[in-house]
Length: 175
Image 1 (cartoon, one colour):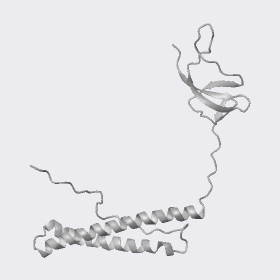
Image 2 (tube, rainbow, N blue to C red):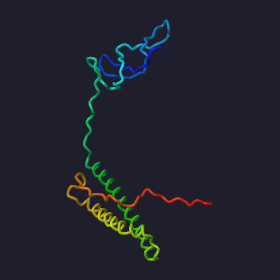
Image 3 (cartoon, helix red, strand yellow):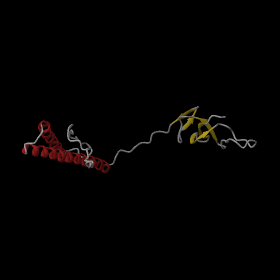
Image 4 (cartoon, rainbow, N blue to C red):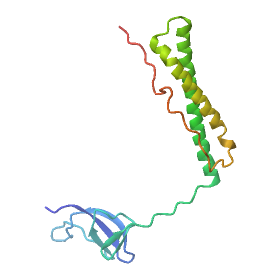
């Protein structure tokens, strides 16, 4: 039984790989009715490297040149930077809302005299985090007034700590 391998089908006029096939290398014969024949003007070379569009020269497969990517247009830069700003602003707003809510819940416990020691320890941490997220949101609001907007932006540093926004509430189990 023949081993099936990848073969590059190369146009001998251009020396460009026009197809890559899986073939056992057995030439077609009318006698057996089995196999495949490389078409006229083509040759097949076994390869695990080449792809369509590669060239073949002196026994070596060469990939096509990497296409030159044009630089983004001013409109594309504006759209990209605006989208980034919008996402960061939404994150800051979500953090501020979550921290404000958590601080409010802990303050309710303090006001009612029912705050736990863990909540009392958490309160100043959350208050400090809220200040950092407010400062971050303020600096994000100034991004578009930077001299380099939109292509050259100095983004403010995002606070490292905040609320876990991935937590979701679940319905209580029924007995």
